[in-house]
Length: 224
Image (cartoon, rainbow, N blue to C red; front, side, top):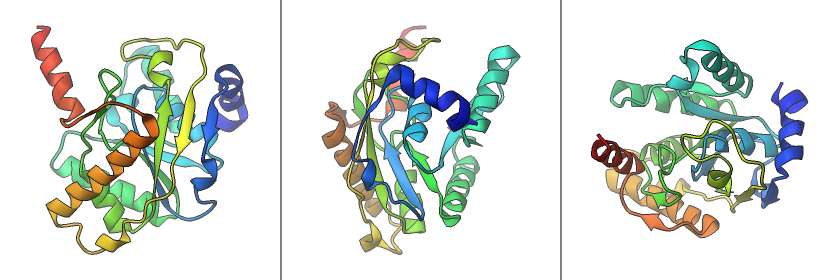
């Protein structure tokens, strides 16, 4: 559906420039690990990859009310997105298992190591759940930098501005040297930091060594 109807229209309007698409394997399981600047990252990244990409989208996108909620739900379902509960604990374990199943099927899984959209365009500390998924599956990781999507559709905006965006695919990273070490939290942190370092190099973003979610919580508390 997205490729036949919505895809060509969006690509014609926003004319994304693309670098390194050949780094995405033509077959087999792979993780696309991207920075996260805007809601539209989950739209344009799958559109430019010639194979289906499955993202683990927050469950709120599938439970909205009214016409907007219905439209959002239909779009994400059509785009192959899977709802996950990000509340932690057992929910995090279920998300991990969902991602591992996608990879076991030989598909492409899209992941945002930061765990949420950047509140200000900077690159934030990665969550180690990504590393655990990569080590348990043993698949390669392709770092992806979304460029300019924040300017097209910042957080809080309902409609995007029409301007070009960029998508840069880095060279695949092989983490199989850490096979069997997914239970070591120091290894998970090392893998996560290496991945985020690669994203920083591709995107040119300023790095901040705290979680983006913590910054959002602090700003929300200050605005009360």
